[in-house]
Length: 188
Image (cartoon, rainbow, N blue to C red; front, side, top):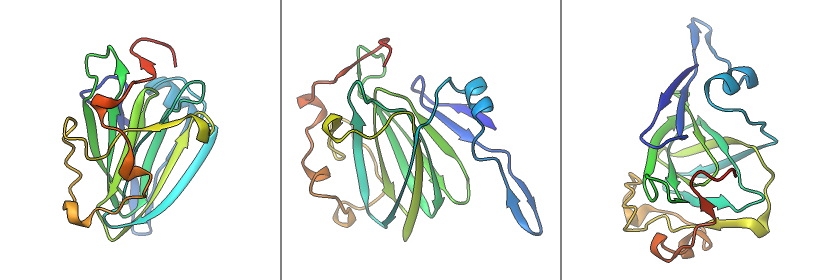
């Protein structure tokens, strides 16, 4: 696998080595050994999958301590714009984001460390999205910031009149109203 660093420390794009022939393709989607050697030491404990249609925006979500999560995400059908926002107080990149296109064609994966808000927008007719988490889901510890925060100015690559949100995602606070539970440099 090839590791591509982004402009934000810890947020990493992973490109697998793909073997193609007349039958199709094969690639190793995850190796604990390679991940620990090239990205970081972590143990994933939960896998999740969602299916969404064009225009769906999910996010920007995170979980608070002691249930904060790192995620390794990928799109196995269709195409999404995946976004990670640094919400670690004191970070030199606080409030900045990385956006990466993940698709069934490019096979890329994106590692989002703890201390980031995460979301994605479906750019294809529909998409199947998978992610590994290094901590269990805990609904009482979830948090979020608004997907359309003007301070973040994320280009979701979808016209605003085509965006589909849950009622929950439509009502999260803006970054300026938000008190982050994470501190840069703190072990999460």
